Length: 524
Image (tube, rainbow, N blue to C red):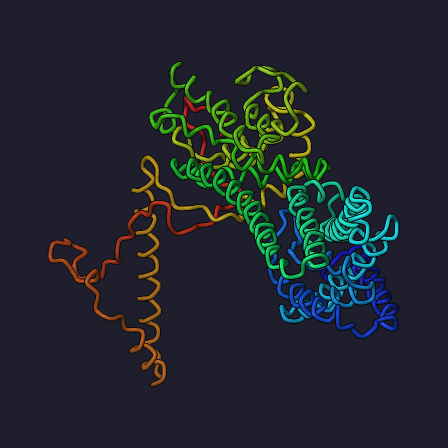
């Protein structure tokens, strides 16, 4: 529990204490099950226990289960003490069986007891829907809706409050993120009411309620799967675009990482930060419609190639517009190549006409483009990249966004310098890498030979034995070639082959290369 913020700990303790206080307070009123209620009590307890294991994750934390069906049915069919004990015991057993941490087990148990007790007390507003069904059907339906809404509001409020405090996000942010689960949750509560009505009037037909219960669970799973797979599919497409050009490998993830830092430094709403982040991850998705000749060209683009490349924000926005989860970030993808002075594309927006999220992505995109190798130039030194961002204030970049970026320059420098850079050869890079490898192996072989000679000169027998152990096994690449001229007889270290997109090295601080003439600036 120590990993939770203080406010979240207060929510956990308050909910747990309230729930267990209610439970213990109602236990003395718990009566032995009567013969006419013993069977339904047992069946509902087993149903509540089994459905507790049928959980579906929510988008922004927490899980939801279809145990709501058993809880609502128990509220309508059983006395309050029995219903709360049934729900609390089922949740507690499931939490212990799943080996949840004690604070999670107590919070979930307390939350279940409080929710069931609140919904059971809500019956007193109009009366039990089961008893009102025949004399006043509309009143019965209204009473059932009150029970269903009370159950949903209490359980979702407690969970959302905990998640907002635990993640330091706003209550509204968590609530809106999990909004897709509202209809299925209400549906399961209605199914619970249906189960109670069927048992009350025709117990033998209760088996028919299994079908809507299963459907409710499948709907939960389907919604979660659709949301998860949609996000994964779109981001995978963007990643494929990055991997299509090995110079931009992981470019989108880097831009998203930088955009998060900037957006949080500017203290934007957490929900807006998430929209900007998701847009940054897919901001170059439209390059799927750009030909290889334009992407890989090492020199200046002609007019047709430039027009083709500048169409990628429009293509990306058009694709993302078909996915509901990305529609709020479409404008950021569309305008991330606009300039503060109005000389950008595709629409030539100027100043604050450009959406703030697009201005943030523009700075992050330009910085990553400048600090990585591209077909038309090598990576710039970090100091030069910072200088270019500074020089672009009021011209290419929003002064406020660029100002926050420069304040965070040490953080960005640390991120770049600590990031593994794949060994990608371009131009003469393969030969340069091979030459550097030869030099490294030559130096290592010389050091090993010197150490071996020193050990062999030592008088101690133990050192001689160590020297013997250091004798390298015969290797094919150490065979002496007869045509080595004056150097014949010397062992030749193995040649290191240049790697392509494998084997990480670390970028040294401030290192880079000057841009080639005729490069394409800071486009990502």
